[in-house]
Length: 93
Image (cartoon, rainbow, N blue to C red):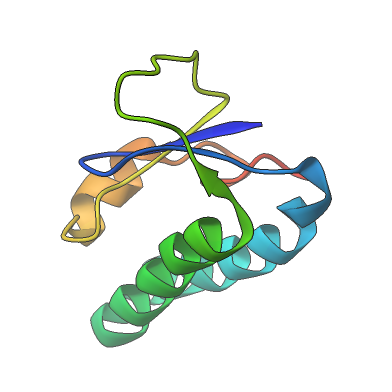
């Protein structure tokens, strides 16, 4: 799976890691629903860091179709809400 993090590029990630990312996505959704700004910020950064830790960055010159697009690190709650689907940011596994 190819994951694009806005403003950071693309990462190739094995589908076997989706369950771990989905847990963080569920936490993020709960913090968004509760308006927990510090929790939202912490979990968004943890989610993006996990993608980098678990995946392999693609070269900047590579432009592969992205299977998943995640917000940039500085995204606001409102910007992340605009990216959400009924499954959150990560498709259900």
